[in-house]
Length: 373
Image (tube, rainbow, N blue to C red; front, side):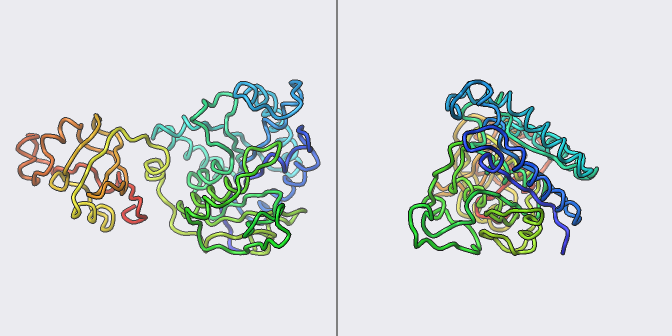
């Protein structure tokens, strides 16, 4: 079996008792399966939910809190319990585990995003098993990952993983909700995830978790865009993960073999950067940057909106008003107003530089069309 770098996501319902509280027996089974995966030579990253679910009962809540402050308090209790339990169980298998807590804010700045990727890479290089969770205790409402399904997909990008395994209590994706329709049929393989499929998938989750199948399908769509195929399903026993990797899992496989992964700098552009304005381009420029891997020059720019400075991220729109991608600009909005529509020689005169007037270099560009990345 070819050795892979694998991200495994385990949800709250797979780690806790029915009404909350960490279930050590469930955790032990997961750890044994993860350890077996490492024994087979694979590199493993664990994205684990469960901090809020593990901690809320200790604070006197009768159910998972719904308020932000309640979830933050519960996570502050549960995160320590969760990681202590993981560390002890992995130690029994001779594995060093490490904790990485992320917030969406950590990924909004390019240097912080790259630092997170570097730290993750170093841990894997040293043979450790990173355990990643959202830092619920300090996350700001509106700037969260929403659930750890999407976090696991983004971690695939950071880690340049060859496979994402999302373990859940339903054995895959069905053509109908299997809990409501007895004639529902499981889909064993999907070549990809369409926007329509995401819209039509049920968002029902469990009483201790935040996600449902919809969040898992959305995560799969993101992981595939980053070059990582996905498995969504269930399993039991020491060999459940190795069986999944071997193509014998109880669930749905999504995507074919791993594709070329997207560079971290372009992942940041595509998924985390905040645009500060828009640049409109003509048809020729739109085709050149989105289909042929060219840089954006002043001559192709037709309009500019918003105020931004050099190195800010902007969206680029075609004549139909469709966003075709985003990139980091080399000029401020004021400077671009002066040189838009000009050929390079004319732009050099205005900017008083002999350098080629590249507005967005192709290395600082991410195309929404999937080309020119």
